[in-house]
Every structure is written in C-alpha cells, then in structure tokens.
Length: 93
Image (cartoon, rainbow, N blue to C red):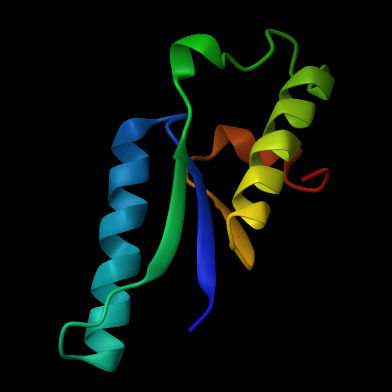
C-alpha cells in the first residue's frame, strides 16, 4: 500500500470527508482493521487565502509546492488535494 500525502485544511470539512472516504474504501476493500497510510498537512485557510484574481496563482502555487515537498520528505508517495480550489495549482504541484 502506498502512503498518501493529503493537503487539507483549505476546507477542513472537505478534508474530513476525504479522510473518511479514503479510509472507508481501504477498509471495505481489504477488510479487518485496515486503514490508509497517509500523512495530512492541514493548512489554516485564514492564512492561506486563494488569490482574488484567479489568474494569479503564483504565490499560492509556490506555497502548495512547499507543502507537497514536506509531505514527500515525510514519506508520501502520492499527493492529494482535499478541496476543489487548490486544484487550480495541481499542474504546478
């Protein structure tokens, strides 16, 4: 099983849903006490506002890349964005 790196907190509500659904699916497929191997980096959305102009994602993208690298350094083999808005930077990450 690979270790997932989750970037969450950009909506803690959707982050909780991703966490729950991923673990439910792993448990349903593998049974027993199985759960996902994952590392969660939860950002504080108050400090991590998306840019007012959707065309200017440079700083936000750079911040997400730093977070993704931290997750990778911690052992994540795959990065998952736990909300729709950060996907604007997915190609850069």
